[in-house]
Amino acid sequence: MSVTDANPVYDYVLGLGDNSLVLGQRLSEWCGHGPVLEEDIGLTNIALDLIGQARLLFSYAGELGGEGRTEDELAFLRDSCDFRNLLLVEQPNRDFGYTIARQFFFDAYNLALFERLCDSSDRRLAEIAAKSVKEITYHLRHSSRWMIRLGDGTDESHLRIQQALDNLWMYTGELFESDAVLEEVVTNGVGVAPETLRPVWNERVDEVLREATLQRPDDQWMTSGGRSGQHTEHLGYLLAEMQFLQRAYPGAAW
Image 1 (cartoon, helix red, strand yellow):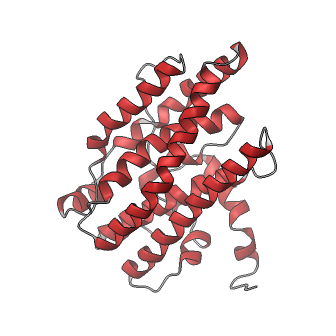
Image 2 (cartoon, rainbow, N blue to C red):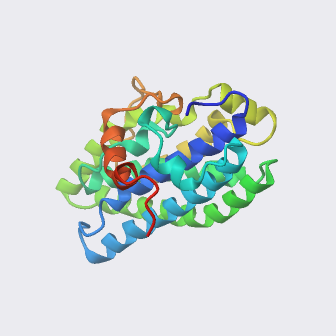
């Protein structure tokens, strides 16, 4: 299933769902492996929030697509080239610092996006956004606190979170790129122009980095392609694990 030029709203909603699903799956890998019990539960709860958002978005995308696809089919029966998520969210956890830095970059972007989507001309999308904003606000608060705690903590924690920021920075440029689908949904009032989110994102990121005594990485070459289905190898491994049961036993039901 590829991007459908005839229905840009479907493509847009599907991409939003892909972001939530892939990042939720990534965070779920921490279940039972968190640095402390409270954080193990915290990351798992955020993963559940994201999966819940993905379900709402996929259910709506299934209706928009006109082919009767269910949320499960969209999640488990597409190949990596059919996913439209940002490259940032598919990056591996590596360590706790990488997980927090990745989450922080995305949360700052996602909150700015969903705050604006509350005013979407698409009533269903606006309702999903209004519900999600409450959850994403907590997500950003959580990741921001950990950024500050790690950055302004020990020499080791400061070094490792700074390294995570430096290595993940190349994926942040894609947050603000546009394409034909985005241009169409912005024109009809359904979506939000990514570039307009940059000032809010910059402000929120810079504020936390200052308090965390971390250096904002210098602008560099930015990688992109996720929205057009060009992904890193990491997404393929993630999907292989996530989709195994449905692929091995098509139509399986409990």
